[in-house]
Length: 54
Image (tube, rainbow, N blue to C red; front, side, top):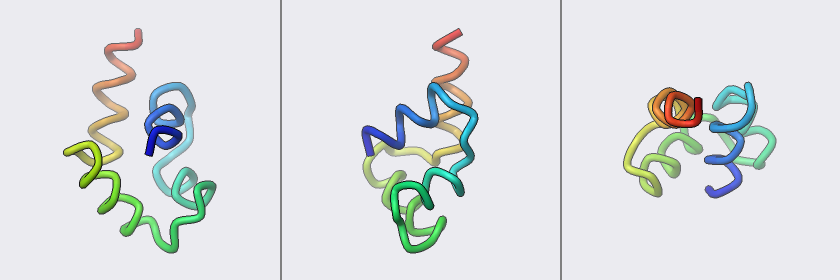
C-alpha cells in the first residue's frame, strides 16, 4: 500500500493503472484493500495528497 500511496501522490496514474501494476485481481479489490489500509478511497486520497503536496 505504501507504493500505491506514493504512486497516487507523485504520479498521474489512475487507480485502475496502479491496481494492475501492483497485480491486484480487480480494481474494486484494490479499492477495498486501499480503503481498509488508509481509511479512504484512492480518488479521495489522491485529491487531498496532491493538494497538500503543491
